Image 1 (tube, helix red, strand yellow):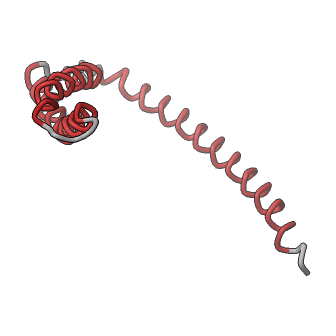
Image 2 (tube, rainbow, N blue to C red):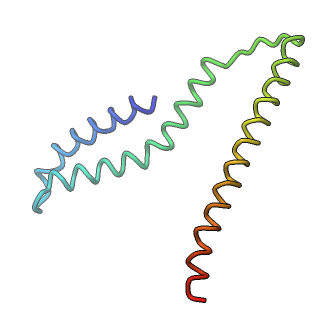
Length: 112
């Protein structure tokens, strides 16, 4: 959806620039008209994209088939993997902060 919208916005901005540029009496009127129309479209696209995604979600709702016996095991496995990933990230952050504190302490103790 995003790529399609950006391509359509670029083409519409290009087309509008060809229409607007002859009416402007400034240098590089095509470039200025193109940038202006692209800027206006990019601001409108944020709201339009959300509206289109909501419309698509209403047309094609997400359906999930839950099997209670399998769901408990699935959540347990996700909790174990998530906890392991969190522990690894915290460990590497600790190593990074230790290295950074030793590195920066060289700068602060150099004048003493």
